[in-house]
Image (tube, rainbow, N blue to C red; front, side, top):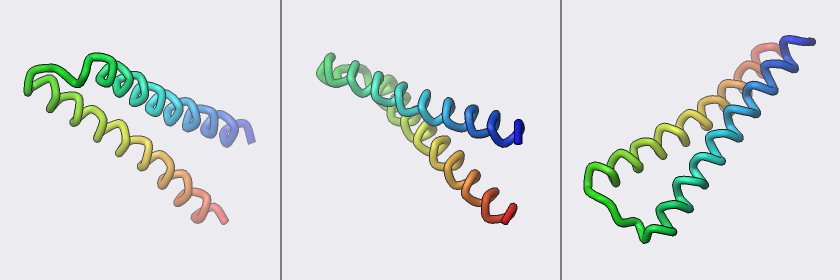
Length: 70
């Protein structure tokens, strides 16, 4: 039981951190008018894609684990 609770908390913290970071970077981009050099824009887009993919994999991985445990 302790393992499930700590795994849930870690999963929740990771997803929350990803979402908060995405919102923060998006807010800063909006605030600056999305100005920047091409490498900066590409790196921001790449980082956003990786954070979204990370959140997606965490969510789907937990669902698959629940299906296997049943």
